[in-house]
Length: 91
Image 1 (cartoon, rainbow, N blue to C red):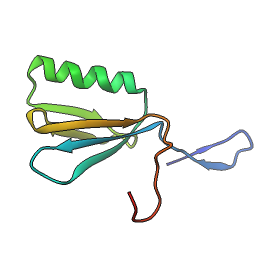
Image 2 (image 1 turned 180 degrees about the horizontal axis):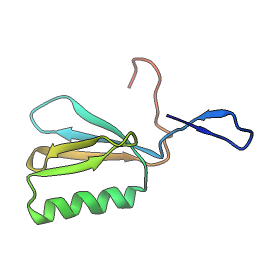
Image 3 (image 1 turned 60 degrees about the vertical axis):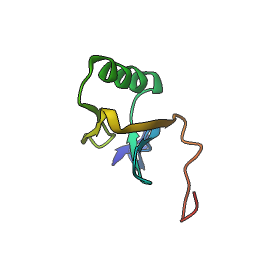
Image 4 (image 1 turned 180 degrees about the vertical axis):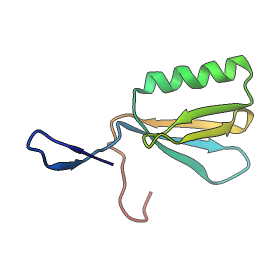
């Protein structure tokens, strides 16, 4: 997604943060790019878990809704400032 900057040129839009959700019984994780703050995400996840919801629903930076089964979440890692972005095959 691109946005016009002050000079009218299109500039790449970088999301504010990336989160990774680990799922139990699998070696894979969900990786999402979200707008907003880490505190907003934490509050949303904690509210879903406390209320006993079956899914934790998040909306990514492209407007897609992603649901993770609440009782299968092993961990949530939040990279708020994007310093841990990697290029290539290494992790």
